[in-house]
Amino acid sequence: MFVHLKEIWYNDTVKVIPKEFVKKLMKPLSLAWWYQDDGHLKMKGKTPQKIILST
Image 1 (tube, helix red, strand yellow):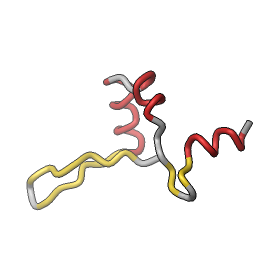
Image 2: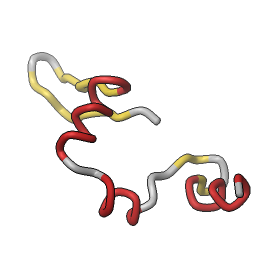
Image 3: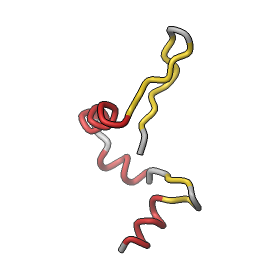
């Protein structure tokens, strides 16, 4: 089972989020939880550049 999950979630040694996972499970509330737990806002000076969600 774990080998199968590794094939889905890892591209060589880089972790990727499968598109099917995002389409089915990513809702505004789940993104908010993810951001609050493992996210941060990338800034350039005082301007927000992007949101980083760590896995």
